[in-house]
Image (cartoon, rainbow, N blue to C red; front, side):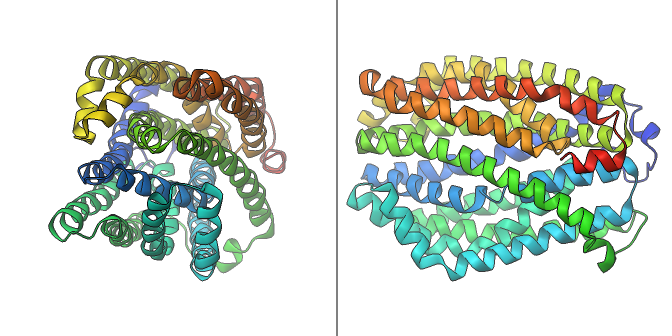
Length: 459
């Protein structure tokens, strides 16, 4: 099942393109797919940034950060699905390929029901913790009250996207993301600019787009499954050993994701303490970081799919070729990001806001955006390797250590460096994330020498 070619069923058939060809075939649709997400964030920011008060930008930034806590914590629905499905693909186990998707969807829908039932106390608690300016808090609350109703579709989309990428249907994943974010962007402009709905319009656009994407993604999966041997089995879906492995990986990725969300939220929280202008400026700058993260994640997704396949097939050559090819290509892309941000950062800021003082203030920190690709690329690539290998415990431990160092820097550096200290702490965080994962990499290679049973219990 090479990239979007389900007729190939043997691993040898999938290796014919070579590592660079396979990485490119999987990564370019993933990169384009991922880039539609920050493009949408940029549209959100631009729509709010052209309203008369910076508090609109801050309100959407705070509201979106709240949903980062609520949704990103369930990132295991994508990452765990991707790793397990990729390994099942390497074993050519069609029954388990289906069962993993069913487990992820059931967990996602159950979690969404809990979030919607608890929406009032969640909103009150989140806004109390953030303690933003009253106007910003009011806008963030209005955003929350609308967007929470998209929870079922959002979490289902995590599982759908992870499944499509793991099965190397990268172009299908691209199609679903284009539809989701295209609908979202169009509705953003219509609801806010034409109908004057404000932050509620931005949130409603996201809800409608997520349900559209979930429907399309599930329809694509149903068509793809017709070409894959195997069938649906409740006995397989409820298999205790597989559920136990899923629980361990989900638990560790959940904790790792919460730690990462805390790290990014600390950026917004610290910026809010420095004032509304700093908060709004950092929200603009985070669009640069978001474009970078989603672009590099395209290579990380390709890495995850092929690493998982190598682990499932016990193919050491595929593992090493994948790691080498994907890392080299991602580093080249990171250099391109640095060039674009360094040369055109000011113009890009101008697209996000026409408030002169906000644009000028944010421009003082563009140097960090130019440095970020070169410092961040290694962490994203190592994440892809460990997700594909489902080494979630190591990912959790590395993230906890990184966040501890980052938090110490975040609470100290801004005190005498201001907002420059805040961004210096962020760059330190990215470097430490990579260094801590490098320490654990030999465990990934050792998996290929273990029996399938011992490898599963080592997750």
